[in-house]
Each structure stands twice: as structure tokens, then as C-alpha cells.
Length: 475
Image 1: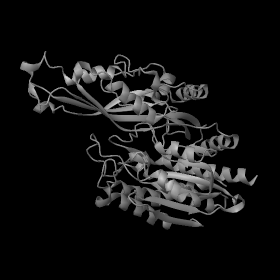
Image 2 (image 1 turned 60 degrees about the vertical axis):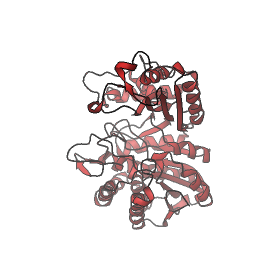
Image 3 (image 1 turned 135 degrees about the vertical axis):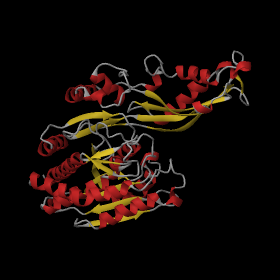
Image 4 (image 1 turned 90 degrees about the vertical axis):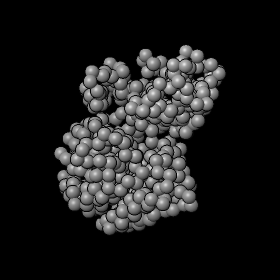
């Protein structure tokens, strides 16, 4: 395999086909079912999966079969299969993962763009879903096509491209069970739904945090009353909610207090954080759009990385019962409702953490107020198994060939529920979890973009690692 030829072929493939496809993909508001309960009637998910199916079916990949798989009352899934090529033929299979559903719009997009308005500027394609991670199916098949064009061997490859990931992948287990006879013996999983610390090297994700979420409601009245009459007598629902949150979080530092939400940090992960901090420098915290003189919660770079990858953290992501400022009258409000999102260390059980939150928040309500915590669900994180020598060498080699820089590894602070599912389903498989969500790419927020030059090289790296897998199996 000639690395230069491979990289050039993939770059041309991106320019000629993949970027135009992503432009059209971004135009489609294919929001995940959690954000669009009427997704089936609206037809946007159907449109993006049919677009991906049509493109995949046209690709010059020998031994390729593409199919939209449907189960009753489930979001559809795109399944592709590529037969092994060369000496790698055998019982082993590579599974490549991605998704096509998207997060909702969010406010704050640049005036010349928008979530469904694709815009290319300075090598970046702006719009919802391109980086998270609509590009995955295109990159996966482009990597295989480039290998075949050079006659490089590869193992049998299967692809799972779901449309429920942003809702917690609750449909994925049913498809894994349904497709189990067709998946074969998966010994290597490549997931393209993660991030990168910078755009200068191949980054490997070694862990993902879990999530526990739900709605905290505090009711003190059956209807609002004049604040001049009631304040000082009727307890504020907001103040009670604040006291309840004090059971979970130290408001002065942001530290999560109950021991149930903490886990020990393996030394290997701490060492990786120190190395990544040296590589990234100020970018560890400078990548965030701090307002005014706002400073990070923590000073040390490595500690900042560990805070966002291995320590629990609470965010208030929504609220009800609070009128807009322009409409706020002097009324003591009857209730406050807060949407809570707790990021968990990778090894903490998500469902158990939700139960702990409910127990802690509902116990002994202040003033006897009506307090309820309604769980939305928990997701367990993921911590990678030790990397075997061939994969470590392949990752390093690919990064040096296509980025001219050594590879790097670190945990990610987000939650990708499919990782725990696949890890449980394929306990003996090696995992390469990577992606294009780098500095300022802003997944889930405004001005999400995919860094096109980086994505081209990442695709080449995926091809290189698939080739290394074949070489290992041939030996």
C-alpha cells in the first residue's frame, strides 16, 4: 500500500462525492426521536438513510451489499457488508459504526449559516450532523474502496449505521440481536463518533463518561400569589431546589459530593491525560468560548482533562416554571422544574446512579414541599481494554504516515451509549474509537462543523489500520 497514493485517492473521493453528499445531508432536519417524536410522519430520518443507502450502493467496492434493515416500531438501520479481500479471508470481521440522526437546532448560529444551512468556510463544513457523525458511513466505505483500488487485503467488514444514537441508542440492542447471525465473529470495532484533541494527529478515545439524567420538580403552591403578600411566609420553590442541589454538588467548587458518583482513576488514564495535556498545551481550556473574564474551574491542564473525562459533573440543562424576564411579574411562583444532567466516571453504572439521584433528592423535602425526581434514564460509560501491540503500532504508524505526527490518546467527556453496548456484545474485540470533533467543532451546539482536511486524513488512517488488521490476521 502506497500511503501517498491512498491519501490522494481518498482526498479526491471526499472532494468529488463525500462533501457534496454531506452538504445535502445537512439540509435535512433528521432530528433524533427524542427531539422529534413524530419522526416517522415527518420523514426526515427516512430521507437521510435512503440518501446514505443510495450513495453506498454506487460505490466501487467489490463484494459490497447494502440494506436498510427495519424492525417494528424501531428507527431504521443501514447495514452494509463487504466480503474479505486477499489473504485476510477467514472467520474474523471488522465492525464499523456510525449514525445519521441529529441533535436539535440550538440557537447562536452565525448569520450566514444555520443548523440546516450548509456553509463551507476555511476548510470547514458548518451545519448540524456533519461531524456528529453523518460523515461516518461515507468515510468507512471510502477507506475500504481506497484499499481495494491498491489491491491491499482487508478482512470482512460490516457496517452498522443507526438512526437513534442521539436518543441513547435504545433501538440498537434489538438490531444487534436481530443481526447477530449476519455479523459473524467481530474481533475489531471501529467507531467514528468521537473527538480529537487537535487537528494535527490521529486521536484515540480510551474512555467515555456515563450519564444520569432526570427532571427535578419542586411544588410549594397550587397557584402563584403576590410576592409582597407571600414572600417570607411561603418558601421559594427555587430556594428549595437550590438546597436540594446542594446535596449533590458543592456550589463553590462544582465538586460532586456523594461518594456513589465517584470512581478511582486508573493510573494508565492519568498518565494519558498528562501526555495529552503536554501535547495540547493551552488548548485544553482555550478551546472553550469563555465569556468575558470567566476562568476555568481548575488550573492544571491534566486535572482539567481528568475533570472532563473521569470525574462526575452536574449541569442544569433546562428549566420550567420561570417566565421570561420581559414577562416576569411580582409573583411568588408555585413551582420550579430543573432538568439535571450528571456526567459520570466511565466505570459507574448509569442506571444505579439515576436511582441514587432520586433517593438523595427526594429524601426529607425542606418545608415538606412536594419534591419529585423523574428519571429520564442512565447510560453507563466505557473504559477501553488494554490495547494489543498490533493495534497500538498500527495507530502510531497511521498517524505518522498521514498526519506526520505521533498519535495521541485521551478520554472523552461525552456519553456514547453504543460503546457500552458493543463492549458488552463483543467482549473480546479490540476497539478503535476516534472522530473529527476537535476544537471549536461544537457538537450539539451552534456552529457545529466538520474539519474537512482532518476528516480526509482520518479516513486514510482508518484504511491504514484496516490494512494492518489484515496483515496481523494473515500472519
